[in-house]
Length: 528
Length: 98
Image (cartoon, rainbow over all chains, first blue to last red; front, side):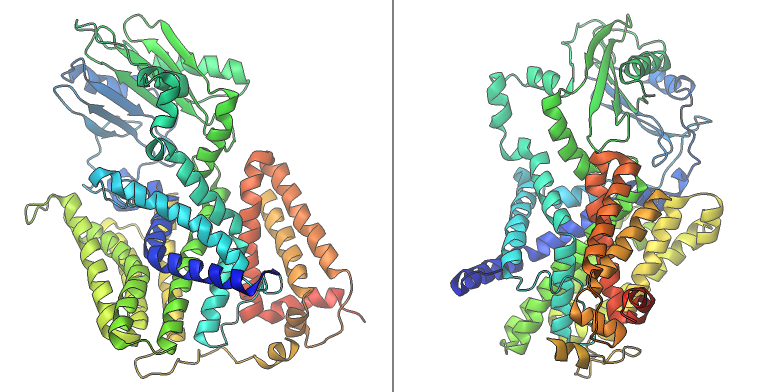
């Protein structure tokens, strides 16, 4: 791109320092987001009891009603029921508020209660990590993620200006050249080819949290009336409590059926309700909201809601998003990826990996360039600790979380922590150790952590087999594709780690010329 | 099947685009003589993969799927050129002069 030298050097400065300041955070967000693409599948892996065969469109009443009838309900009791889907094959019932809480996972056919492994799984750990970094204090985590997303956009634009030969180098990856050249090639390659992805995700991410970042922009338009805003934006109705005890609806299925009929007639395509919410379950003013997402194969995350009076079955509201909201729904749908498309799911997973590789190689390139230029040893330690520890270290920590999940027995309690937390502790412990190891171990750290990843990934896959009896072949025979997918991903991770080990500098000093990679540099150099 | 077709057209299209560059052409063929029109055919096939995506999923979803297909295949082509350039030779032979 023909730009002045001064402009280029200021872009260089911006790209370098913003990248260094937020690279570690960005890597964590990208890595966790990549895992979140398959969070329900990882849940199946981490909670083996929930690996039930999907049974869709079974009646809900015999399964949920006995539990709802015996629940001690109050006017503040809210009950949510999630119907089984192919990705989340059981009925999930939860209640909030009120005198008693429910948290049930039920078999979709027999209605039997499934005691799942006490774990946050991927939905409760990787997913919140992706958007809040688990920093809940003052909502700071969400703000840091927002800042990182904004920086990501700035980094992308400045990166385009910096890149001298976007088209000439479009397919260039030269692993046979020296390490820094290969790193920069990988950085440019993964950045340029997935450019739409690198712009789409930070942008839609910011828009999803616009309520958090600009809380007044919406409520102002409604004179601060949040209830009215909620009703107009998402069709959520909450009636005041009547103060008198009320009954539950006699049949949830009947209401679901009525709602589905209305949607099907309107759109001309079969609609499937996926979520039911009973508000004020113990009160005479209780309502039942039936919701569906994605009636068709569309990206837009349009949610239709129909709300009934729980006592009389009278239809209260029938909400469909308005056209102005469809753009917003497309933006959210593209990011949340609820659409039933396995092709897109895998492509976004690969895109997330490309982003992770881009950030990691960017950081490692900077580190190698610094060390080459002769940085003082103490600073080298800090730089190493941050770059290596937050990239390979985070991957190791993730594997430690999975291994802890398979090793801990279900009733374990230790150090005053519940089992869920005992899975999380190894994650952070390994992460901290990895950062320290990278800082203290010197140039061998990168290679050694790759070796650790290679072994830990295999260990996790083997432990799944040892603790559940589900090896890859058996899982495939039982059509447990979620388990097959996670196990295969672990083995591939191990393979890639092994390959990098052969490429990376060994303890002895000079980079190892990769075996099996003949040096084919001459012709390219001649043509330049 | 439609998805495989989208991948295939994209793969051939992007390979041709890569081969239309002098350095990649030399790496694959060890020859400097290139056939004209390689780049144009490449672009046509990349466009075709977009049309296949639209036919399969509609415009709304294709707008997400097609750029990601292109990105994934581009990385694959770059890796192929780096580690197994000979695999592209038969494709190049089809197009080379004489």
